[in-house]
Image 1: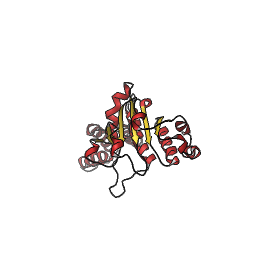
Image 2: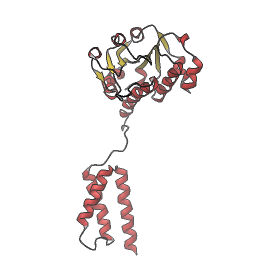
Image 3: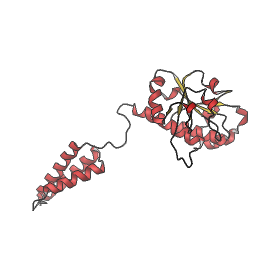
Image 4: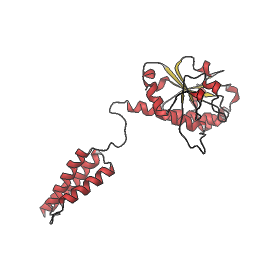
Amino acid sequence: MKLDNLVIVLDHPDESRNIGAACRAMANNDISQLRIVGDRSSYDIEHIHVLAIHAGAIFDNARFYSSIKEATADCTVCAGTTRRRGKKRGKLYLPEEFADHIDAQTQSGAKVAVVFGNERTGLTDEQLDQCTCGVTIPSSQGFGSLNLSHAVQIICYHLFRKKLEEKEGGYRGIVPVDLERIDKTVKSVTDDMQKIGFFKMPGREDMEGFWRSLLSRAAVSESEVQYLEKTFSKISGLATKQ
């Protein structure tokens, strides 16, 4: 994912502070190209900068247009965001699906736009007709409307995560070890328990089953099982010296 080729388009946003918050959301995810369908003079720059915190430059460098079509003319993909499905709205990507869909295009140098509608009305069918595809963020049926900046944050986050995943070595949270690795740890731990005389009566098999079940449910990482092995090895070593 090449984040420099991503364009965020806000179509006639109502509230200046929402624009500022959207700028901050973009900056959180290393996305800086902002385009606004509307008139710059309609917005309170001071209110924008207050909510943007240190991302005010994103608004200062924003470009203004008279239509979605004009704002996205240099893009190869124009995705409209919507929470409403309908016959005219076609296939709607989830944010993570959209990130996969446009990845190759951004890397090739093509620009990709994501369009967000007005806070009150969202994107109309006519505005979505100016887009080439749609993206939707699942939310509660009882209260489905998202704040503009929250929607921008969610979409930008998934695009940013795609970029991180492509870095050398990847970018992942805890990666649980497989059962084969857990079995090695279980053997190491119970061997050490055997050395210190823990199993004075038959019971090793039950203990192995306990550790295997516990560790698999805990979804332990490689560093965690290594730490566990070293701990029991040290306990065993200290006990045999006495």
